[in-house]
Length: 462
Image (cartoon, rainbow, N blue to C red; front, side):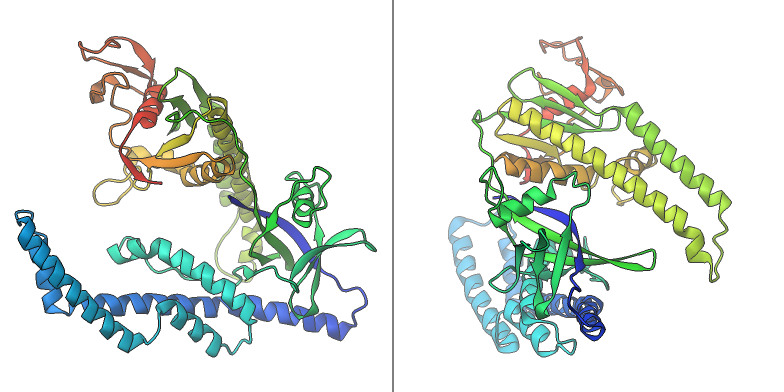
């Protein structure tokens, strides 16, 4: 079942507490907030070190290196290959024994021991347990890219969210006296929940977690976290509540795929692999006009503000930071709307799968540099965020999301499958293959790309 996160403002319940008790509770929270990142980095470094030791043991074993070279030979016959594989298995077993002698225990266990034993900050073991699982999950997802040299090891910074798991002592509850929702936390600390205008229906989500909603729907609260933000010289607390939401089921057509072509002419163009249904999501002019207005205001503020060093520099930059945050919130809202439209379209055509392009290297040349023609596109669009929003919204209704190789999807005719770079301009695609039923017919370029994505069998990730 999909897990969603809701951000809810909270505040320490100080009713009935003396000044000393109130200060002690704040000190307890701030101590964790100020030091948790140190423990997180120690765990992460230990995981990385364990993998590096494993790698060194492999590459320093000459027998292993020689066997790898021999097995890479594609001309080997089956009998020789089987003998070499058996020898490789024996070598790997010996290397594994060496690894056990050095580390004694699995890297997961060693990393946790390091965090719990070397813990001068006295952070609760329950917090460290959830922290360890989060770090391990994140590290494992990045391990292959780190090994290839495509990504560096992460670095946790001061002020990271404080993770925790719900149990018999850590829980959400409804206080009948104050008629409000509360969070019972560590060290006898209670937080009050505030929903404000509640455009996201966070109160309903909490009610469902407590089994109090009028519709009878029940959700499960998963491991969550508390985030502390400094704003206008004042610390604000937020509960990042993770909720396990049951999948909404609907009748799907097996093999029905929706292709999503992300671009700048149309933010998202949708098409299916079977039926003629299509939809353009968003509008270039509206999006770029608003984004351009933000950039114009940003440049105007930069000209007005003197940003040289000095005691007043931070104060001078505050208007710029507020504008950046406003722009970021606007883009995020747009992506929420666009992703909802994509999933609603997929539900409408009863699709079982949504396919999108793997845009990891979009706009980059062989040297990994962004090309001049793509700088405008990348500066004005948040592809990764939109794709992630589509992913989690699709998972809530049981739709599978896949990523395909983006090569030639915009230059290929969706009918005959022939690559024709010269057949596409910024708006239209006109097939020039005389054997194609669509030869000479003008179709929308983004529709052609979306349909190619929907029809693609070149899956690179799920």
